[in-house]
Length: 269
Image (cartoon, rainbow, N blue to C red; front, side, top):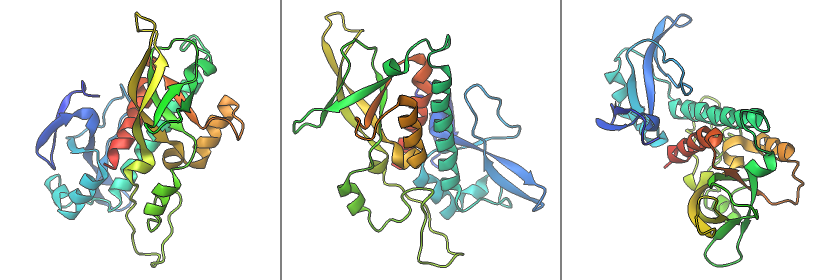
């Protein structure tokens, strides 16, 4: 991500790695006979759409300010910019992360990813101490973890703090206002995940000892909803009372999923 090509954000007038940005282009809509500014979100290795591209930092707050401050007019002062653009980009990023996860499932236990699912998806156990420490419940050495998926919902404390926010999840929008009123989507960053210390028996350690690293944790409920939780449980044959934290092994085949989830985490910060 840090090593991706550098592009200039037209909001900040600062330079960032491309993976931290969203590319926008002008597009003509035949139905409305008007020009719209639309995101050009590409898959890794795909060909970008034709036309001059304009880059904006991939962040919900920045994209909302981009509209409020009218800076989108720097692209085209007659073109339209959708008022829910930050929600639209969020949904695109979520779909991309689902695609990355599905590709892991497709390749796993094949010549493209010759590893059993129980080796690629590892149970994570929380240590009963005041330091919020975790470890991988696996006796074999591993290369490391990309991230941890939490199948539980965010803690009750988090939910109470945001009890007035009825728009936590994209598929669960409710409002007491009229149908025509627009309520911007807002997801607290701590509902998406956190960084925690995880220990595991490392295959990269010459002394054969346990190592501890900071690993990103993600709430599947917030990002992929109940369907995401059910998909993971079904694929891993998990029972209801089984451990709700699953670590994803650090391998080249899991890198793109880790990057897409990291983009989602940064999106609401």
